[in-house]
Amino acid sequence: MNKKAKMVIDKDFKISEIDKRIYGSFIEHLGRAVYGGIYDPCYKNADEDGFRQDVMDLVKELNVPIIRYPGGNFVSNFFWEDSVGPVEDRPKRLELAWRSLETNEIGLNEFSKWCNKVESEMMMAVNLGTRGIADACNLLEYCNHESGSKYSDLRIKHGFKDPHNIKTWCLGNEMDGPWQIGHKTSEEYGRIAAETAKAMKLIDPTIQLVSSGSSNKDMPTFPEWEASTLNHAYEYVDLISMHQYYGNRTNDTDNFLAQTIDMEDFIKTIISTCDYIKAKKRSKKTINLSFDEWNVWFHSNEKDDDIMTNHPWQKAPALLEDIYNFEDALLVGLMLITLLKHSDRVKIACLAQLVNVIAPIMTDPNGGAAWKQTIYYPYLHASKYGRGIALQPVLSSPKHDTKDFTDVNDVESIAVYNEEKEEVTIFAVNRNLKDDITLTCDIRSFNNYRLIEHIVLECDDMKAVNSVKNESILPKNVDRSELNDGVLQVMLNKASWNVIRLGK
Image (tube, rainbow, N blue to C red; front, side):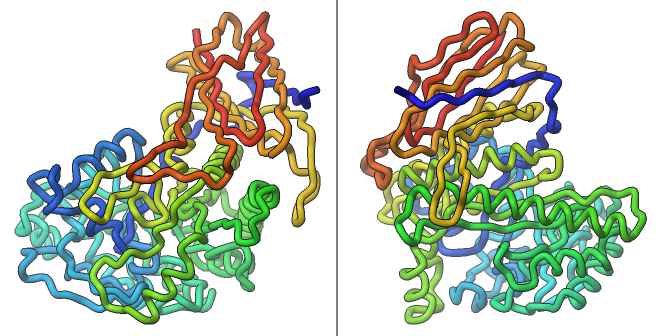
């Protein structure tokens, strides 16, 4: 017999309107993300600016609303002035974070132009590692002030009459990490974040500022870092960042797919910490979360260490080029569900990264085509069908235990209601590796809705991968759902990502 799960979905069980920026991504000057990724003037289908059109098409298909730039660890020694003006005049620099050579062929203005081409907004990070308040303000003036000042007029001189009008800004990156250039204590960072935020909002009061939170849940200073830094910056910032990567280092797939329990705990702890500081300060303001680095990352670690240690100062070496398998796609789907479950407080999220570097999109380094990794598809489905209101499902699922987690739901699910389109989408993962599960959904509040389609991503081989020559892991439409009198019955095959779409 198949295992059974039950769920109730009601249009009044609202979590939140989903901020479109929850489907954001990230481009860092790291490895082949920029050079050989988005930019390759020698490639056969490069446009007049040297940008790969096949990559742009894949990014546009994902409908990425916001892209974080230029780092990442890279930003903590970034001299933004080196990245603007005539390309021939730009200096080459030793890039300390990833021990590479940065040529500055692509910089701020070029990236802004690329974002416009892929119909995305920029999320800009300022250097609070080796620089500070004045440089952050100068950069903001360059980007957002219309004209009539030193740096706005410099932008116009560089050929960009209209301001970039960047609305979301990160105050540094992972400043709690000892690996960070210009690493700071919580007191040091809290003070400079507060003062930088105050000054930047004098220039442009319309921007949103993201304070740098803990680099991951296992940092020894977590969550005191959040409490200490927000104690200084609470009234001046709008969001606080979170970063988390997962990997299956012990080849324990059951345990690997349960790690979203850890992710959920991370989110809840930061929310609690933010709300503690809110109460402490008697503030009416609520700090939301920017989960602006998240993904699976572990496959390439050994190779990366060798390149940075033994072969430094290369231009665009192949760093962090994880090749994702099917089980990685399942975890990415589970992480997306977790983000949507907390969309009342998680307003921005950035899949790290977008092209070549721990990315859903890869380009063949030998001059070949761009291709889609396994993780491309859950991200695509969520971005495409996960716009609207997140609904709190009342879910009853069989459970199992893993090495690190107990009472793990076999089925994880979330529903999104697009009122304008009169559509409901159910995202569901069966993370049981052995058993199919029949999911019975009570959707009676959605009267007269019909089944549009049931999309699945599944594979018998958990380690199967896509490649430039063979994209074998592909979503498909199946006939495994039935809707009668407000009751939806769905067969969730073992180890599968499912998208069930309903509409009038």
